[in-house]
Length: 331
Image (cartoon, rainbow, N blue to C red; front, side, top):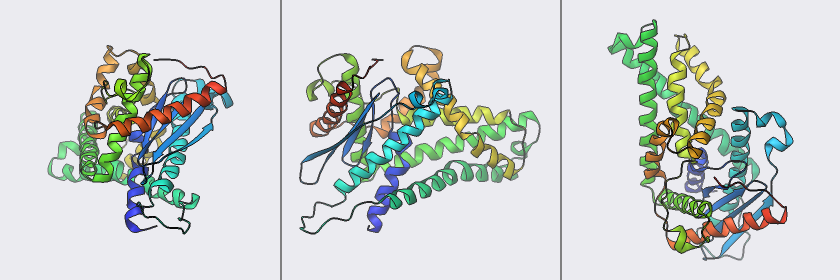
């Protein structure tokens, strides 16, 4: 794999939580390289347009985590189960799309090298380390540094805790939005965000009950409440509040808390997004609104060809779902 291809794949792995959306009883999806993965409760399909223009697909049945492990039906824990499975399926979809697209359009009779499992594992490890450094380590370091100039930030009383974590949270959000905006300027990532928009439009089209086709899908907006971008934004807002009530003051203790509590905060954030998606006029939906605003970066208007790929992925997932007698809930 070339260095360019490595970093291209790395950016896609890093964006998996941002691009993913869905719930066990609903239709959801994820943008991948030159394509879209769509997920129904018991089925999955990823459709990718190859450099030749051909659309290739991969479909497979999936079982709900809560069917295999009943405790994943409980609030908070169900979010962790759904998110864990979504990330696993997202990696499969990304690997399939990478193998289809990273030929760079070159025709050759020789067999193309495929992205192996160990390559994807290395990408995941690298991405997790990058995530913790970018959104945990760097904001914490910068906040401690600012405390040298403004001692009130590092004060050990409750007021100091509030101020410290407020500054830390604002820095984290600024890095998040800045990172998204920066990578959105790259041509490859802009196309991913267009496919992300196509996924949202097609899901909206399906949820509306109208016939799913390119013309109808293009009438809908690209901002969807059940989106990984909104989810990540909510995680950062909730974590800012949670950290304020944990009385630790050293750098090591604060860093450990940020790592250990991440799954718990992710579970609570899932519940909030789930509630907001079903009750779009509620107070909690208002709290989730900044995530929708951020989707102005991570979703872009798709072309008709990109919408067609998203529809092909949905058709494949729904055909397999119907074969299995799956039960689908429309939000």
